[in-house]
Amino acid sequence: MLGELRRFKAAGDPFTPEFFAAFQAVYLEHLAMLGKLRQRKRRLDGRIRSVRAWRRVSGLVFVATFAALLVCSVVAAAIAAPPIAAALAAAASLPVGSVGKWVDSLLKQYQDALHGHKEVVSAMQNAARRR
Image (cartoon, rainbow, N blue to C red; front, side, top):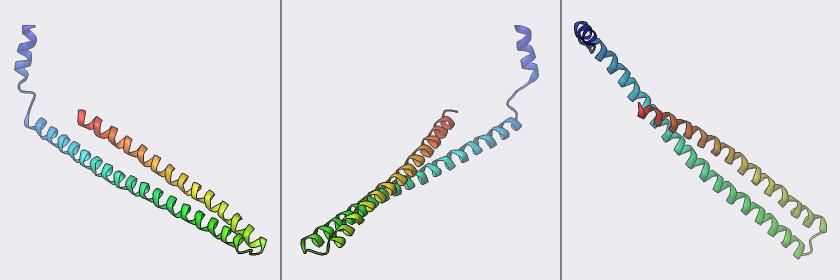
């Protein structure tokens, strides 16, 4: 045991200036990576907020369109318009609801994908902070 201690002492200081230079370079690269991850997470948060707002807006637009077409069909039926016009107005309101659901499902898929990306970036950030 004493022999090993003497060999360690004879080897000199393991923390040479070259070691500190390399350590400083790795440390600065690590900080740069954390900054990039933070920036990417901020961008993802902005996109998630934007998609959430677009989902609300598209929902309101399609509900308003559906309601307007429904009201038009009721008015057309009330003023005794030809039965074909009333049927067309009623039939036109159905695809609008389906398109609204389809658009919402697309936006939801995009939002879920963004949440997945955000979770990955958060995991990378947490792993980088622990080291």
